[in-house]
Each structure stands twice: as structure tokens, then as C-alpha cells.
View 1: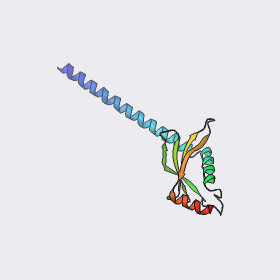
View 2: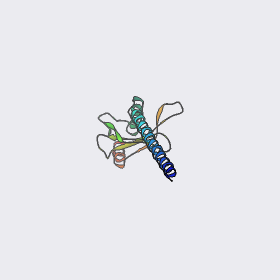
View 3: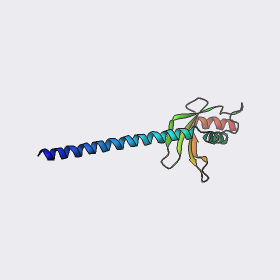
View 4: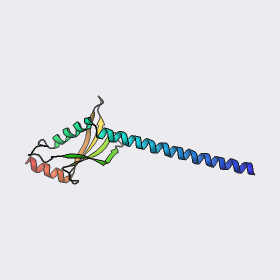
Length: 132
């Protein structure tokens, strides 16, 4: 009877230890992935993509005649896109209602590109007014 109890306790302990190791490894991998995504989003190559995307939305950006004067990366918005790439939001002119969302991914040559994205309704309205 004691031998059977020791075996059961040993099995339960092994299962608990195994689960603990799995949880630790998963957490570590997630942290590594988040760190890598943050590095990519803040890279010089990504900044070139942002500027190109911004200029596509506002050809006068960063000039006195443009709507878009500044942008900053919203670190809290960085996440993996289920279809591939990294989703990130750019806050325009320090106004959280003015946002360009971007999906960064690598093209067939391994360079970062903007696969998709959009603008908030408020920013879209301002850009339309500028175009008139």
C-alpha cells in the first residue's frame, strides 16, 4: 500500500514539475518573441517603411502644409499578426485619435514592407480636407 502511494505521489510530482517547466519555457519564448518584435518595430528599416506609408497618406507630411507633423510608435499596440507579420500603430501628432495602423512583414527579398494598414476616421477626415 505504501509503495503504491509513493508511486502515485511520484507521478503527480513529475506531472506538476513537467507542467511548471512547460509554462516557464512558454513564458520565456513569448518574452523573446515580444523583444524581437519590439526591436524590429523600432529598427531603422521599419522607420523607413513608416515614413513611406505616411508620405503615401499625406504627401506633404512633415512640412508646414501637411497634416502629419510627427509620429510615434505605440509600443502597447505591438503584436503578432495571425496571418504573418507584426501589427503596430503609429500615433500621429501626439493625438491618440490620429492613428495609422500598419502590418510590417518581410517581402520576398527579405526587406520589411507595409502589407496593410489603415487610418482612423478622424485622421482620414483631416487628410481628405487637406486634399481638397
